[in-house]
Amino acid sequence: MTLTGNPSLLIAGIGEMVVSSSSDSHLVSYGLGSCIALAVWDPRTRVGGLAHFMLPNGPANASSPVKFIDSGLDTFLRAVEARGAVVNRSILKAAGAAAMLTVGGGLAIGKRNSEAMNAALAGRGLSLTATALGGTAGRTVQLEVVDGRFLIRSLSSVTEL
Amino acid sequence: MTLTLSEAGLNVVAGTFGRAMKRAGEALGSMCGEIIEVQTPLVRRCTAADVLPMAGGPESVVLAVYVGIFGSLEGHALLLFAPEDAHRLAQILLAGLLGPGELPMEVTDDVLVYDELELSALQEAGNVTISAFLNELGMHLHEPVQPTPPQVVVEMAGAVLDAVLLDLVSDADQVLAAKTTFSEGGRAIDGTLFVLPRADSLRVLLDALGAIGI
Image 1 (cartoon, rainbow over the protein chains, first blue to last red):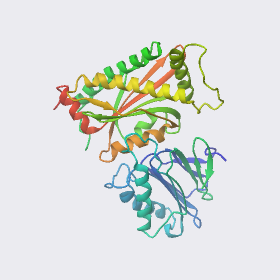
Image 2 (spheres, each protein chain N blue to C red):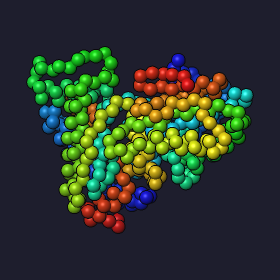
Image 3 (cartoon, one colour):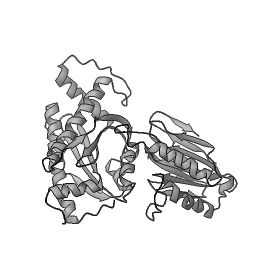
Image 4 (tube, helix red, strand yellow):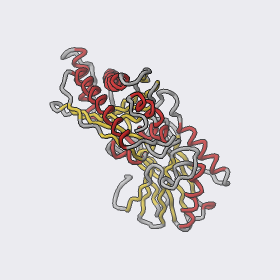
């Protein structure tokens, strides 16, 4: 099990999202620390999306559509639906929201991101079926559009969520 | 706060940061008794996403010494090394402290594992380097600039940097990132120093430099 290979990689950088209905697409976010990645996959239409959110709340931002969870979540869900997914029957998973640095105590943004994601989804009648949130380890995540597999790599391990 | 800084203002900041980064390299060099070459600093005003390639990409594994900056100038400083380079630097520093033949280091196959002495030496290297940077900057400021105690993490560069970037971009679209590379040619040790100041702190620096309004 590796996170790279021949399939076409679509990368969601910090504050960005990627959506695909192509069976050879792997949607990837590299090096998540306190950021939070949300993966959506519709098992019926086999459409997937991955968004790399940065912060809990703030105004909609044209250059980074999913910078903020509160203003960017609907943008992301609409983009996934526009490609043919139905969010209500989709599988939602999230990873990230770690606390990398403890110095100063002011950087505990990961916990706030985690809470904001759960609250924003609950407000839309949605919930996460699996999560890898918190802790102190960085993560790289990958959603395989063909079968919805969601893989998480840290420095010490690769796991399927 | 939006980072409104003219090109001329950016040049003033770049020049001052450049001199401070040179001091930082000299401090690291004198700490390990080696000549350290300091690359011309790169100062960029850019998005958070643009900072990650400056650190070698989000997935490159680094040993990072993090120091928070507060006082009249606020922000974040990170001294990054490739894992192998960090081991070599720790060995030089510990040999200087303990004398030859007295290294109690356990050699492991895992390059990502450091013993406590190594971590302590690297923490101190970050502390000395970043403090030298801040001391030079402090000469221009009327109020003191304080570093937090250093913290060492071994992680993907993206994961270390995003904690810092998120703190800076909550109310700004762009960040100011200053970076230089220190090289010790003989033992092939390269380190990268990043300094990311808060946008509103830059006003204070420009004011102190007599460059406000440019």
